Amino acid sequence: MAELSKEGATPSRGPRGPGRGPRGRGRPPGEGNTDFFTLDGKPINELAEKVVFINRSAKVVKGGRRFSFSALVVVGDKQGKVGVGLGKAGEVADAIRKGGDVAKSRMVSISLKEHTIPHEITSRYCGAHILLRPASPGTGVIAGKTVRAVLESVGIKDILSKSLGSKNPANVVKATLQGLQQLRLRENIYRSRGLQIKTPAKPAASAAPPEGGTPAAPAAGPAQ
Image (tube, rainbow, N blue to C red):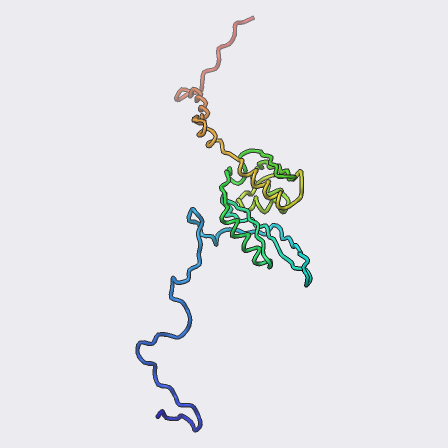
């Protein structure tokens, strides 16, 4: 029978037997890893996720009104890839999560020229009409909050934009993404046509003056 340390106290336990590991419910290293990667091997955790718009809809039922939410989410790696997704659920958090998952699965590559776009482009989607123009370094992103969410997710830092049509966030986002997908670099255009980019010829160097003296003065004209 185990000895009692104090009168009425519970018996003290002896040392743990061999073969018993530490207590706890922790998982061994490497187990339960939830890191996901894109098609090019980029970790999903590095993607920037922005919620553009959250809409609430109500359905009238016998016991009252039943609400549901939809979230428009833009996801990008700020290095030329972006995706747009719409998620619907009974809770806001679930709608945002679904929209982010859809956007990550629909990411597309955009042709950029340094931190701006290679040329001017206009795009229409339903009632939305978007104008995008390249800008010089230091200009910044001149855009509304809806267009800005897409441009910053792509990685554009200098651009001019104007929304000329509908202000519906869903249509504005889709028009912006459609316009960005139409951008093409000069190298890609030449390659598709089987042409080579011609580099401008260097100007010929002027004749160097003779060593040890100044260049000779031009001869004087005939006397009048």
